[in-house]
Image (cartoon, rainbow, N blue to C red; front, top):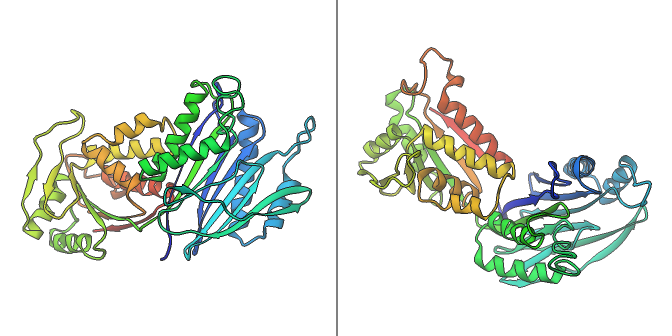
Length: 393
């Protein structure tokens, strides 16, 4: 499939604001990944509406093959201009990375993209165009594995203004800090969080502006196979386990559920051993099967995984403390960490047998707790921009 990307963003709301005036959209076409960062003028509800409209219009038009001119003209005609300051309603950056490694970047009044390759900053040749009296910067370049591209709203370069720093955190300072963090981090999520955390600190934890960092890293494909629940018919045990284990040799394998683990152990004739370490009293300990990356308990663990992933997707409290929780040695944190940081596509192998411990057998199948969890898991992982396939047995 060519180039694979790891995409993540984190935002800080302006102090005392409930809504963020920045908006990030991540879209996928058949041959590319698109990341749009829009920064609405001002803050609060108005800025949130302007940024959301800008990102949605740009995303919809780009997906439908509109030209840059058409996109900019539509935004100029659709959104209001500030009557007082006569300035733009919303600034934006659009980054499109094609599967063949070609990249296209458009910037309107946002801080410039930080492009890191092999641990160093790379400058990208720029073409400036004027569309409807707006100066737009346009870039075309190639990317390769290991590259990181960082889009930012101007809250980043305003961090510390008048407090810790006279003129804010200059672009050059942000870029050199990003290079340092690039060497220390392995995922887009950690790189984005490191930068917004530094901004938060410079703002003395009272951000004077909405602050967003969106990161795209070019990485290897990282498939994850997750099996949970026994199949409805016991004669399908072998089929399910073989499907789960076959296919992609590079895929990391995860089993969630005691019955599922016993089935894998029996079919593969590999020993199942349970850890005696209770790292978290609320989450059952993990187990081990040779050749399987991770073996955990089922419903309780998946429920906690889902909570962590939802927190991440909702951008709620995604700080360094969140990653400390992801780094904990319990089953739920380990599964969530793998999905967030080490997965580009997820294949779920789901057994449909009713487990009397968890539900009333009279309930229809789709109300079953495990299936409900799987549906929510599929939805939240897709929201993270990853492909998800589910097979039921």
